[in-house]
Amino acid sequence: MLVQPLRTVIARDLRALAREVAAYSDDESLWRVMPGITNSGGTLAVHLAGNLRHFIGTRLGGGSYVRDRKAEFAGIARPRAEVVAEIESAIAEVDAALARLDDASLERPFPDPLYGRTLDIDVLALHLAVHLGYHLGQIDYHRRMVTGNEATVDAMSLMELPEARREKTVAS
Image (cartoon, rainbow, N blue to C red; front, side):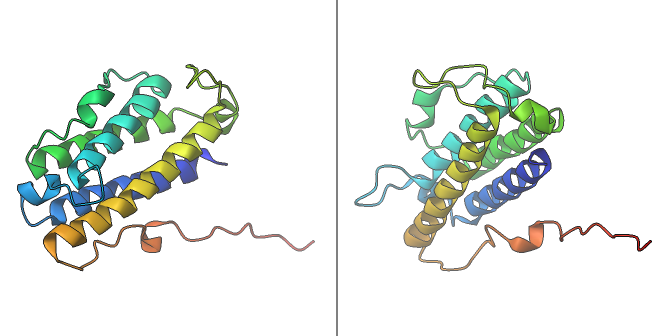
């Protein structure tokens, strides 16, 4: 009962991430670091794509992505189109990995210890979804600060979520 909602929310937020990156006025503004913060929107976007491709796409889904976390935070400027392509790869890999899971598999331990701790897959997957939303909000504020454009890209859109499904009962 959790796999499909995870697929839906993570895909929605990754699509919003791609819209955020594309909404920067130019490539340079994506990588500008503002006073009082340590990461640019570009750094956070690359980090999110790498994080999800690694933990879900590769470790849970058997993909071939090799993560370089240090490079994610190096702040090496790349064109927006390249960052969006990384996000699109993350969307495809994460969705394919989650599509192969069932709810029972979410109750198993994640295959790798993290910081010396073993976490169940469902807890880690929820953490990753919240982590994505946290940084997505930071990127939205960063984009607005560096571009001066307060326009929304409709991140966290309820319209991208499926409508409620109610079981119909049959009167006897």
